[in-house]
Length: 330
Image (tube, rainbow, N blue to C red; front, side):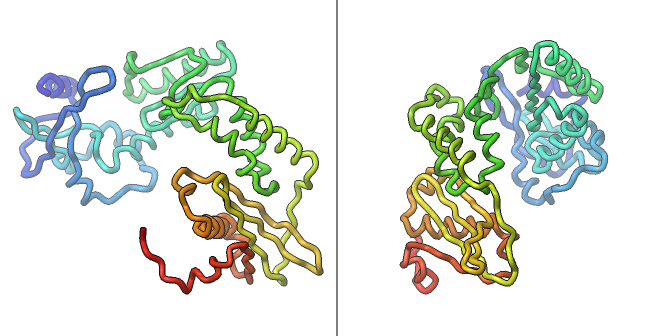
């Protein structure tokens, strides 16, 4: 703790303080075995108004705290009291403020960089292009007094771990789903059909060894391709003079629904919605899944349903009595 405090004082990041309020400073172990100082600002955060808007002056936000607010960041250590001269970690508005600053600094380089607070990913199609992109990013941040930690930097890799996910240059399954996702509202039960492909693309770092494109994934790919070339990828415009018909559909694999209109004896398809069920949702009873499917369709199709007469079709008769049945929390 003493060594960290002395380093912060040396670089002018903190200064001695003597206010009536102070937050406790703690030591937290990092992944590399070194220590990080963390300050418990829970009480200060509880009375802080959350900032949900872009900051008007990003440089002051990250480089300098207002003199009248510095005492609020006071931390207490075994030796003395100190307050921050720069944006402190642990404050309620620190992450959005820092994110806004980073986004603004690299705004002209967003075509080849991803930013998540202090994590930056630079991606390119070739080695020469990557050199150019890295040069732009590495030269932009120091101009705003940002420094890089070489130990945490990783360059010229074809596979990286980012936000607990492994990203590689291949990702054929993700590319396939990405290309088809635009058509999901045109294809009924899209998520249910593609569930086996989603299962091998949403793997975290600890489960990446489980990636395997097997028979079920191959069958799903063929089925989606077949739907693209055989199904009519058109949705009809709605008619305000007729009610809309919402048909829910639910299973342990996926949930969703179809929005249609019956006009002069002809069924018009207005919208398809589908999504894969989560691990928690798979434990729901069938009637709960069916109710969830209808609710999600209302959320997704809201603009189609507002101000309209709605007919809901379901194959769960007990669902019709749900509004008149007392429900006990489990």
